[in-house]
Length: 303
Image (cartoon, rainbow, N blue to C red):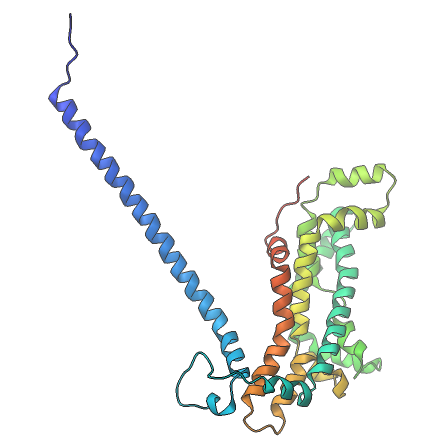
C-alpha cells in the first residue's frame, strides 16, 4: 500500500501564497473604499459649492435688515422676515414681469418645436438633394455667437415696425440651430424599419412625424424644451434692446430695473426678487431632470 506524501517545499509554497493573495485582495478592497470615499467627498464639496450661493440668497431674502449688515457670518437668521418678498413683488413689478416671461418663453418654445422637430426629421429621415449642405449650414449657425446677430436683428425688427412689441421678443428666436442638431441626433437612433412599416400602412410624412417619430424622440424634445426655457427665461440683453414699455419687461429686466431704483440698501428685497425670478426654472429642471439627462446624453431608442 502506497501513501501520498507532500513535499515540504510544496507545503511551504502554498502556505506563503495564500496569505499573499489574501493581503493583495484586502489591499485592493481598501484602495477601492478610499477611492469611493474620496470621490464622495469631492462630489459633496462640489454640491455644497454649487448650492451655497442659492442658500445665501434665500437667507438674505428672509433676514432682517439689521442682521444683513451685521459684522459676522451667521448661516441661519435669528428670525424670519418675509416682507422682502412683498416689497420685491409690489415695487419691482415682478408679477407682471413673470406673466410676460411666461408668455414670451412659452411662445418661443412653441415656435421652436414647430420648426425644429420637422427640420430635424427632414434632415434625418428624408433623402433630398442638398441635405448635406443644409446640415452643414445648421452646424455653421452653431459657431456664430448670438451677440454677433443682435444689431442686424434689431435693425430688421425696427425696419418692419415690430420694435417695443411682444412679437419683437418672440419672433427672433422662432427656430434654433442647436435644437435642430440635438433632435436630429436623437432621431438617428430611430430604426428606419419603423418608418418603412408606417409608409406601408399608408402614412405620410406628417402622420409619421406625429405618431411615430415625435413619441420616440420625446427625451430629446423634453431636453431641448428645458434648455430653451432656461435660456430664454434668463435672456436679458435682447429685451433690454427692444422692450421699452414697462409691461414688456421680462423677469431679468424687471429685476435689473428694480435694482436701479431708489431703494437704498434693501438687499433683502433684491435677494427676494432674485429668488422669485429663479424659482420657476429651478422647479422646472427638478421636475424634468430625468428627461433632460436622457435627451442630452443621447440615450438610444429601442427598436
